[in-house]
Image 1 (cartoon, rainbow, N blue to C red):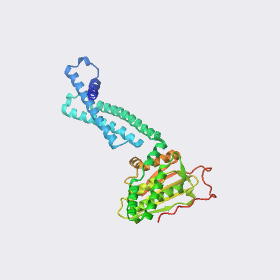
Image 2: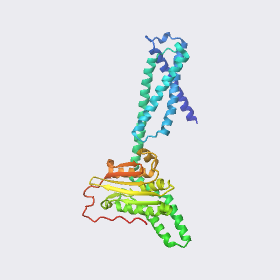
Image 3: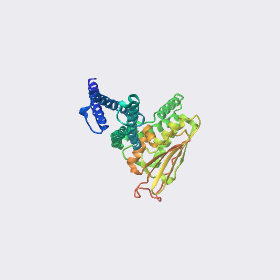
Image 4: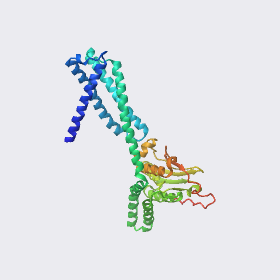
Length: 364
């Protein structure tokens, strides 16, 4: 409480000091020769008062603009840094022009500073304000980006291991419990086994670990079987993947988050059957995987918005960038998500002559 009062008094003192000096400087700048000693106390007081009025109103405006920008325009890209630069600059210029017009109207010739001089001052102050706030925004943006990067693969994987698909797991346990009550343990056992396998696979995900894509498909099939317990025939999942892609090494849990997103935001949002398709292609330089669904789709195709909104896709993209580097690209399609990355080096990539793993059979 006391510290807040002291901070407020300190700020008020700075406003009075800067405003007073600014008022005197503007008044003196409007004269052909500076002769402050000839000013009457009334002229000097009015100059200081007008300067304080300008500075106080500018300070209040900027104190309002900054939290509004922080709340409604989060620093998610370099484009948003520009918004955080232009908003204070524009607000500053608007306040100076608006207040000048008001004083000119109210005081008439008694308000001696002319429009050209005040306009030049307004532009200079706006540029200075925008530069300061822009640098602060740029610093905050890169500090957060550095913090996100410093979090590292291990922290993301730990968080990923704790994301255990609660709706699917709870639905599976409820269905298994109902089957056990009906003495249908032979039907409940496969559900429990799939849930256990899925959770174990997530929990065992290690740092920088890669697996053949076929393993990821198998995990997806476990998830699909559990999801179909809840959605039944309303959920269909298909695969369109060449056999040569199944042996390519990929980061563990690079496909499941996209399936979870498609089920949670596709199948759940529809009152009619939903079809999810897992598709992929590759050549000697690049491979691409996509998960598409017939659900309502994203409400935006701006990747930064989705990446900040949902931790599943955001963590996946961060891990892909960590593993593959800048060559990774994640795109939002009208009905799904596509990610592309460089294929492994030739010495790590499977030879076409080697035996390729076969596609796991989808659940019936």
